[in-house]
Amino acid sequence: MESKTARLTVLIDPHKKKAFEELCAAQDLTPSQVVRQLIREYLDNHGVTYVTKSKLANNTKA
Image 1 (cartoon, rainbow, N blue to C red):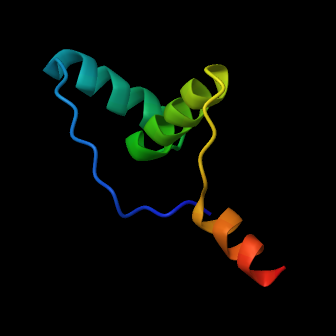
Image 2: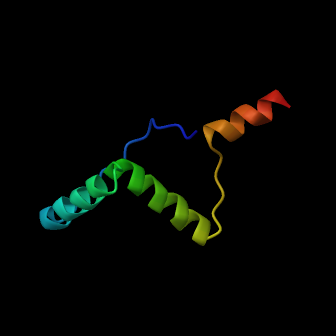
């Protein structure tokens, strides 16, 4: 599981925000869940690696 301690503030057009929130709700997802998934996919698509809290925990157990 990822650590959710950092905050990202994004400015967006109010109409896009409303449409995004409605689509997320229709898919039974929170906007935060969708944004986190988009960020993971963006990093993966660009070959960027990063360490998650679960990876750190697994490395310390070995």
